Length: 354
Image (cartoon, rainbow, N blue to C red; front, side, top):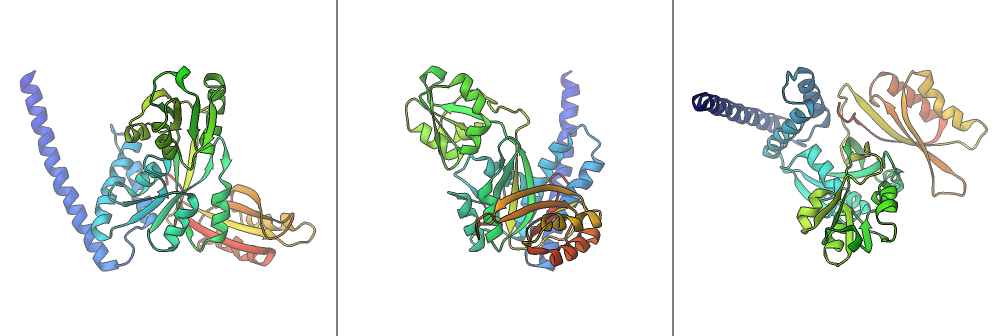
């Protein structure tokens, strides 16, 4: 048995040396590409194509998810040899926004925690970060209206999306539910755990915080206080995990957008986000949807929001399948520009997981 283990470990050592040599070879080629092309090292469409190809050719036993996580870190380290990329997100550290940033850009990117979603936009607009990560919708609580409003106002473009399963934990200094008198969390998280709180902490006050990590910081400073946050936040703020997976829906997922200054080229599996408004004539809203049907473009999201420019005036946020520069989508947008009172294409980008 010992001899068999020794031989297997020697085999692993040899494989590790091969992997190390190939990783450095990949990094050298990536750096050479960066020297030739110059400019931005992050190419969302190219990275999406690489990850999709790896999924298709993955023989196992590693899962597709594990392969993607490994190669995201490899690409992050290689990207850092070309350019130091700064990524802004809703902080402090320990938020789900930070986790989304790590999933997309890896640990080699420079983290820029921000105090609010508004600040994420401002930091990227000012050039103090190359990209920002902002939550846009949750499967339980719906759309984050502030993000939609800021997308309408900003000059930034949507250049990516991340879908992140959200599992909440109850954190506190104590380890007993009967010792908790108040619960801090972001309003979205309070809503996602509403029924669990009703059943287990019905008498505890529910207090809103700017982020879940900020909630954990506040709870760490008060006896009898708890926070709804990630287990990572427990480690960061020295709190005990009192209960795990307290979200009401076990499929609870949040969709995040990557915002930046650059347009994204087609990847072959893309989505386009836009915002539009109808002319003040009968049947105008129906006319807005006509170009998508006329050109066979699939619409995956349609949501109205007050336009903030006049009473009872609305804008419509739409996600469609395809890239704004390609085929049917390009033709549909050309027709839509003639029918809409206002049209802003927020960006085209690879579909999450694509």
